[in-house]
Length: 73
Image (cartoon, rainbow, N blue to C red; front, side):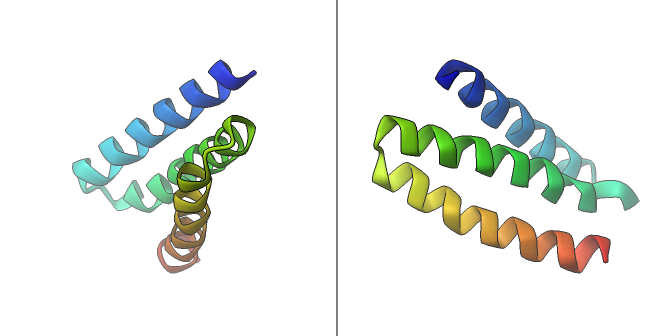
């Protein structure tokens, strides 16, 4: 399960970055991909007992939520 979470976090993070870099009208959806990535890495950090990793991704979850609110609503 941990390996799957890491790959979900990595894949969705990369897709989000690509969508932002393309600077399309749909680029706001990148924050949804970033949110999925952040949640996956947050859970992975909890499982691995890596405080810095889960703390960082908890902050990213807040930022991603803000981005979703500002870009998509």
